[in-house]
Figure (tube, one colour):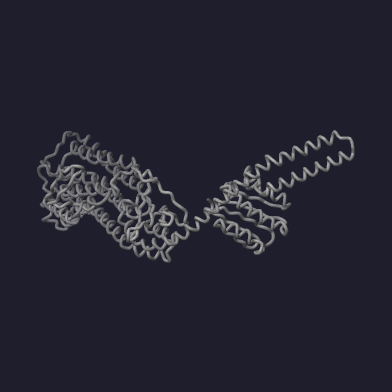
Length: 587
């Protein structure tokens, strides 16, 4: 006897039977035996003559019932399992037609309709226990009305002899018109075939939305069910003469339907096999282990291209991605999946319980928790090795981030100094030059006029030098008009023919100024030897890229300053022939 404790109170409930969730195989075997016995009893007048048909039908009922129990005790597949369990006993009751007496045939035809209805709806609930979108909800309602309501119309308008039953069986026929019989028979047949075709259409609509592991494990079942549904609908069309032909039709439909539970069981075995094989696959994909390789291995094994891995860095007390950059996770609250945009995030710990990483996956993988857990356990050692690498990468990223902050502060300070010079000393020099020119116009003595002119020229010269000095501190055009205008102004001062191809990219002021200074130094070096250059600035792979293509080659000795400035920011400089390429990581 099992005792269960409820909610907040002391209430307890005793069970005299073992819980199905704890003993699924035993319950599946019991359900299979009961369903087979029910089918044997229902069709006994037919079975003692047709042994092969009996074997096939009993196997179909037992397999469907066992699959139903196994799915009903699984996570997310409970509705599908319950529908299959009901369908197995409905198919057993269908063989009451073999008695051809009393209410047996009437129960049989409705059991047949209920079998197809519950089986189809159960497949629509597979594998996550819910209907996906309006098409599936509409079909679940319309299919039940069509299959069961259509059978009711047939019983009210047609005689039992139309289906091969004896004329004296219990049959609720109300309309005895031949015309109404024909109309109802044709209408129900057309609608039934249409329901089967629409079910295939819903399955096609569903498979377009599947991806990854979900598609690999679900698509074979959906395709098979759509095929079986169409064949079964075309088999059951028109009038049937003779009970043997009616029972042969049942046998054919049952044989086709047997493939559905077998496919579901095969998918379950495939899932188990995938959980076992994932360890070897991960070991092969993570040699040698690295943060990027481990992430890509998980993406391949779990068929989730959006999967990401964030490693725990104990020294920083933060999670970082494969590049060492800090990842800010949403605070835990009661808002559920919305707090992390619906993603499924699984914490991974070491054998000693220390934090190791967080694996961010598609929420659809929740329905394959066993596979995900197996993958995480198999990849834990590779995650530990990759964690050591990301710790080093995180330190490098800290240095780069600190350097970037210094550049940001330096850029802000230089911009302030340039603005102060422009608004202060430059304006006063301009005013002084204008005042000297005005005074010069009122003085008659030649010596005094010459002295004033020299003073005005000196003020103008000082103004030009001050402007050049201010541009060296921080080009005003870089802030006001962007990198393209600043480079164009620099090319004019260097008297160099430059073709600019600058994309619409505006990084942080510090990074923009760093790229400008790097390109300015390269253009200054090229101005002494090249007659024409092409400058291109664009963004690629999370990096800000500046390229200078000149009509002369680059000397390695003249690139040391450029390389040092780029490496300080975590970037790189590549000189290939006449092209110099600078790559700086974006903030």
